[in-house]
Length: 259
Image (cartoon, rainbow, N blue to C red; front, side, top):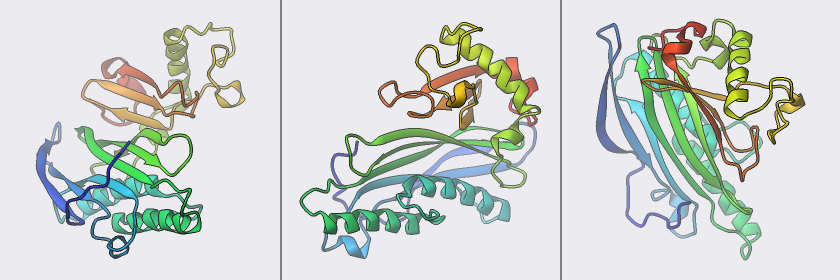
């Protein structure tokens, strides 16, 4: 949890410096990434009133090529959606998303001034893996908008480095059903669920008693990460459920190069 609001004046976009030069596995294509830092410090509405506590580290490619702009847009859009506290569609620009998040806090704070605890948000984007045709980005986040506790999550987005567009999970795989059946067997072995028993027999709560892949599938240099966030198949108290699979053993399931 973020306990204190930053008290130093930071620019809306502050380069944290180039931290990694990424080379494609089998081509000469390169992408140079940096992190950009966003806070609420420069919001006009925060000069004379209380604001949400917020710290965003957004991963971006430093390049004006159209494909790099598309990559940046996909990462920014995913980060913005985490900040969305309203029923309407989320903003796709980080500055606008921060305004929206802070405005939501100020509106409820004005309505219930003696009861509202400050909203908090932290988002940190990291490059998880890259190879020919694939950029995998992890987004670690914490959001608190009142209640007993905040919500921590880990998201992965996978981007086609040839088009700059996000790859849906189903497009990562040659046969999603075949891979799901394979993972269910591994899942049952790891969590000691008998093959003939309900997938929920040991306390999980898969919808309709049917195993499903997680919303987040990520990649590292050696592993496939299958990450179920809190509430996805288990209680908040149980925390996230994570499977790590050796890429060399399961690369044949994938429709893209993952090594």
